[in-house]
Image (cartoon, rainbow, N blue to C red; front, side):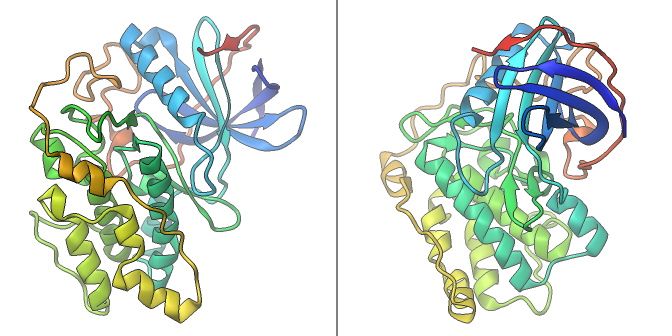
Length: 333
């Protein structure tokens, strides 16, 4: 691993190394180090010349959302800035890789291990929903692990703010984790993330997805866990539980009794938004986060939905060299 360049941010100066931590629809994530404090970070670097103006607005929206999130199970944004050629996001570094890689290497998790991770994921999502934020791309490759074996939810590219409990139709996220209402271009609420959580729990336990809409659960999974998965994967959004209901489910209570754990079950807003009914369908024009079906002309990363870098098989690690000296930067607004 060698030093590639230094870049001055709004809070510190950072060394960027040639070690690739991940790749996404818009850019590459490299290992970085804060010169002043010495701590390692993850630097998400996006070339502006391959993006349209709407893409740049979308990325700034991602920064605005993530920079206001502070939760032990969500990746912290340390700094964000840009120069004439690149956008930079300096993020908390998780040296344990992601859940996708872990499960690919080790196979399906035992139910007790899946429980440990899943509780942390749900608490992170509960926090988002309390702040009226939808993640909209919860998947194993966006669930990172730190050195304490803690889960950190990452990548807020498709995140958006709820307005009156809903957001307008938009096809976004990763196909294998998309609920029916997204595929059918329907209105979205916090139950979108609940479906994705159901897929994540199923995948952790099976190292596979439900096939053709049918949930085949392997032997040895508890009836409480089966019941919770089926509830989260209800086609009818109103039948899916809220994050608070997931955290107070019989499956969670069973493991709480066995392990003496206390789970935070803060009040969810789902009861209010569910009673509002679904507003009239108005197709979203000029999505706040762009269309994932658009192909970025000349972009090395391609379309977020078609690129192999943003599928369920996305790898958390790869190899790429970035060699450029950055001289001046300014804060993103």
